[in-house]
Image (cartoon, rainbow, N blue to C red; front, top):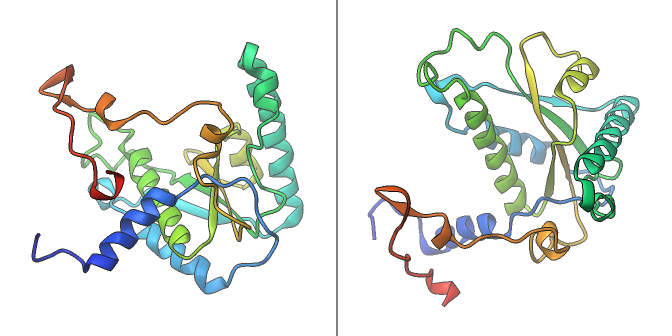
Length: 226
């Protein structure tokens, strides 16, 4: 055990938040405390970012009419997504894919404009700005789960339309709409898995050694999973 490790209960809390985080679609209308939202945003803003560029920007949607317009656009994209799914269209349309009308808070997460000068770590991989912002969203998600608040990541939208709806500058890029709020309960398993849409694959199928496709020795299962 490293001398830098957290205490055992703290370690367990971190892993529990990771294990029990869910992409929530069912929310209660109960408001969340303003200082809670601030804590979640501070956690997001503490995320690592390539070249310390902090490419994330958060827009809190306070205007109810704007929220309704965003929801209407997401609904349009939901129908188009169903059409693109072909044989699974009806199955998809039965799924609840967002909680925009019910959640306490809605946030639009975007990448900043004028990102081109940031080349530290991005010269050959400019998409690292997106990877950095995703880390910020995950921080937000885990902090919220630790405090018993649900978060749902909505990605059914046209970035250009959401950019226009939110008055974002040219060059910026919306990457997520987050639904945030109290929930009656957290799903015992990812909703798409519970609904039979797909299933989570085991680590053994995701881990290679030395070259792509060369299976690595199966890691030992965590003590709590044995």
